[in-house]
Length: 480
Image 1 (cartoon, helix red, strand yellow):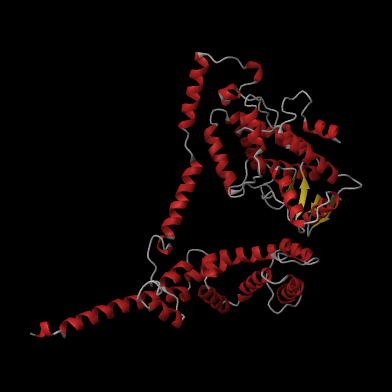
Image 2 (image 1 turned 60 degrees about the vertical axis):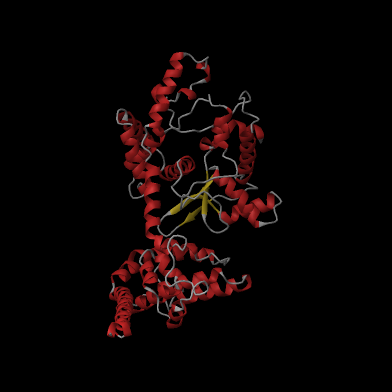
């Protein structure tokens, strides 16, 4: 078993890093993955029939968790999920529906990574490889492999960086596409997903960085900085694109004056690089801070003030009236999440949906939120009640779900849990956010409520001003 995993990983016995911590971890993980894929004792890999298509070579997350508990003598399912997530974080298995490399104990479909892309092959892909991959994606089936927003931004950035050799990148992408078109359609679909999962590890989605307790790739670079970088597509990297500290070990020699000057030039060029990602993050952070500044009690004193620390009792009057302040109403317009977090905002949004005869969407979302807080013994019964009320044939408050979410939800209800409706709830939330919520902000209901709060504040100011003038006019000194 160990010999076969070494052959697949491409690491020979002469490798000086053979006994390094990263290789030890890789061998252990690959032994587990090889056992999971065993035809007799492993997890059965099957083809699942979808509504209009077939999903080839997949397993479910629940099957992997059960196999880990059975074959690794694990008693706690949380520990099995943790181990599976660590394996997924290194790219040995991946979900086919999203880019988050973690393991879930449900009906989520997973696929095993090809040994060619295993991290034991010491992959440290260059930006040139990533540019070829993105360029190749633009040439393929656009409906199935359309670039995401962050990928389109990366492609534009790489095209500006590789202006002089973009023709070379484009030619390599064309050659790869011609090779892929000669393969079987199902095989090509599997290879596309495996290649995408490889880049999810090395170029993760913003906000979905997959980390483990130890960044093994970083440890490898620190231990052997002279390692030759390998190209995913078999390209020979140009000398100009390599750092002086990443030269092949055969050329390593004592540094000369010329080598030091080249390294200085390289480091100066790195300092002059424009960090787009950092600027975007800073801009987003500044926008968020400015938006929520008046809601931060450390920066701005809350209005009305805390009656426990001051003599102002207007807070209690506001609570008795059950009328939201202008500050609260204005915060509902920040996002749908803010509107649903506030009980008053949630009630106002529900009234608006009732006026549009679409309140079942929010009622379903609230029912699923309540399901997540139910005691374990009540979960199965409550999950079935939600299905009967919102999703069953002839339901009293039927909601509109896409076929994918409906099939995933119906499959999850075979073994109901607190998160059986996760896909359906996410679909309904996006539907409300993109459709109903935008209309609510433009509706007369929200605008009138916002203006009514402003009028109340203006009336109070005018009343206080008039009362002050009256006191001044009726004072004895003024009369004399």
